[in-house]
Image 1 (tube, rainbow, N blue to C red):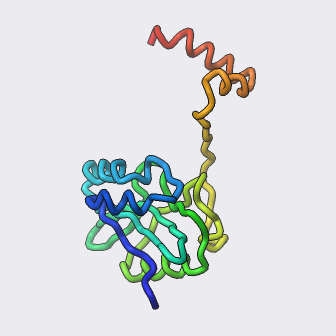
Image 2: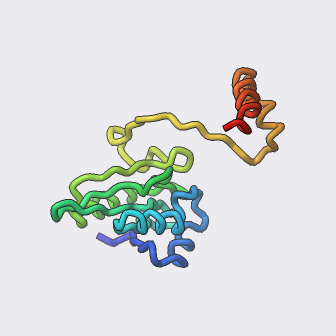
Image 3: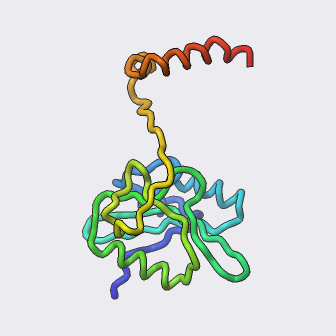
Length: 165
């Protein structure tokens, strides 16, 4: 089988940045964030990149060792799989990668905004939490105007007490 993936080490900054071009991503996907996690944990971190037919699907991966066995997880923060499209070969490629590396388990996920549930079988997708996303592009005035009255009152109350903290 052809290999449609590569791994990019956290010390290959230019290569990592090129891989994220044309792919929606968050700060937790960036090489700078992942390198800081590596420095703090000592764990190997790399970017898994599937690339075929102009489709890129990637995820930062942290490899952890315990008693000679390895598992994988997302580095801290909200990262997870992200990409610029779908491809029928992705899931099979990911499974082959995981089997080849002999990982005993994995704690990964889809990015909540940029992930696509079609990349994995539905039986393998679980939702464990809800996140709130706030679009910070509009003005503060516009954001406040669109909030509920109760939320505005909470913010006003906090604003009056924040200097006392």
